[in-house]
Length: 80
Image 1 (cartoon, rainbow, N blue to C red):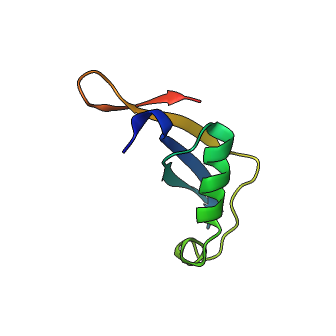
Image 2: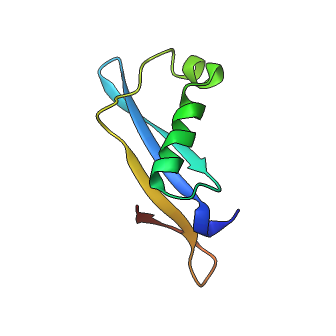
């Protein structure tokens, strides 16, 4: 995985009065907006829709973080 162009995109939805977070690792996105668009395509796929029982994503909430290895090779998240 290329660390410099990798992102963790988090969406959420409500399921029976609880908040559920969906995490997507996006590779080769040039910037946070591209990563968000790529993750949204995956989130709209039939398999993802089925896995969350067709609950719609909360369009008012989104989190994008850069995913990079540090000098020790550990993966760290930094805000986009």
